[in-house]
Amino acid sequence: MTGNSPLVKRIAIVVGAVVLTAVVSMATTLGVSRSIEGNATAINIAGSLRMGAYELLARSSTRESESAGFIAQLDAYEARMAHPEFTRSIPDTDDHPLSRQYQTMRSLWLESLRPALTAKAGSSNQVAMENLLGLTRQYVAEADQLVSMLEDRTEARIDLLHLIQIVSLVLSIVIISGLFLDLKNRVLRPLRKLVNIADAVRQQDFSRKARFSGSDELSQLGIAFDQMTSELALSYHELKEEARGKTRELERSHAALELLHSASRSLFANHDLCSGAIPMLQDLEQLLGIGPIRLFLHDKHSSEPVEAITTSTKDRPFYCKDHHCNACLVTPEVFDELPSEDNDGRRLLLPIRTPGQLLGTLEVWYPASTGLPETSRRLLETLSDQLATAIFLERQITEEQQLTLAEERAVIARELHDSLAQSLSYLKMQVSRLRRLNIAGEHEEVHHNILEELSNGLNSAYRQLRELLTTFRLKLDTPDLATALAQTAHEFSERLGSEVKLEYRLPPQTLSPNEEIHTLQIVREGLANAVKHSDASEIVVQVLFESPRVQVRILDNGKGLPSSDQPAHHYGLIIMQDRARTLGGKVSVRNRDSGGVEVALSFVPKSRHLITSEPAISQSLQQSVKE
Image (cartoon, helix red, strand yellow):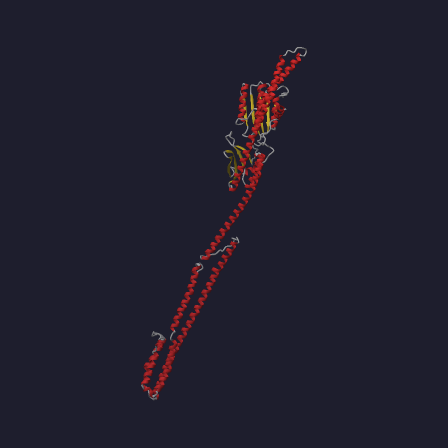
């Protein structure tokens, strides 16, 4: 048996060897047994021939030897010598010792002993009898030799038969022992090892290996088991890692959903994207391993999207209205490690939309090495929907408050026009009537001065009231503040007779609608004062953004202010100061070094895009009218 023979082949060889040994043993046994078949009969016949020779010798000395019966007895003796059972034990070949011995014995009988017995029958000659006895002894000696040879041959065949049986038994034992050893080493032990591997695999232990060598079936099965356990170990490890990843992803998703839930309440409660969205977006970045995130709002009056918030920046953004907040500011080292176009980053753009309206775009950066899982993408899509709802509600609230404010202003304007304006007109008419009266006497000059002062006061109050009515009726129905200021500049250019220059450098959506209205009203008030009182030939309006403040300046080259450098009891200045306080800023009026007056407004835009109340002057006027 070869070590690399297949198992079935080895078993077939062993079985074949056992069968061959059995067949050879049986065949040889059969042959040997057939070769000694009749030897016992032949030995018996040979023995009877010896006894028969002495009987014939004894009868030859009697008178019966001359009878026909003696001849018949000789023939019977000779026939017994030619008996088939006897001759069959004698080999057919002439050179065989047993065949030669038989021929010698037969020749001695035919040529010497029978003729002697026939010739000496009934004779009492002592010499003849001694010769006959000698021949008989010689014949019996040859017969004994033949019997001995037959016995030796039979015993040799029996010994050969024993030897064949022993050899067959030994070979069978050796072959069967070899088979058992081979089965133990190549079948039982490998099977036991494979069973142990299967039990280990059942217990999720993939470290055991068969490490069989060879090409038989069990070796191939062991190799297949090793490959299977290796693949199972790899698959189990991958599945385990995938399950861990899914678990971590689900935990992140759960945390992100909780974060979105709490952030949605903050967004809808504060109505402020910066304070409501940036902390939530930064927490979401840490959970999902993404960032930075930027939000762009789409302005129908701007060709490019306007950046509204960002979660990571080195410099304070231009739109930042609260300079006490550092939520989005990071160190340059942290900023440089974030994914970007120059730093192995991928970008995801998600639309922020409501049905039929695109409000903005959410820009999400994530590392290219890790990618963005599908669950994270769905969470970001949910976030974009929440932001769309928050932005839509914020704009809706702003528009509603604008409408409310416009209606409130219209009511105040109607009440002022119907009450205070008519009362002032009536007083002006009464003063005119008093002037037409001729009051003579020592108090004539005093009366005249009083009427003059009263007339001037009424005219000033009436003019200021008409300006106030114009202010209250003003609506920001132009596309944006820049367009409204351009129209205002054109309007006052016609009043002045020369061009009013406008320098406007504000980023888009820097101001809320409330801040835009108050800024526009302050500019109009400043232009009105410059056109009426400065005698200027050139007026410049500057609206600039000097982070974090908005700077508004109305510059003219007129005669300037009186020596006090501030107009005394100027009602328009009071209104401008009230509006500036509403914006959280201040208004200053001063003479320029190069000549003329500078009206300067400075304020920091508020973080909330909400319409607030009117200046205190409007409330006081409304209350006075109602009283």
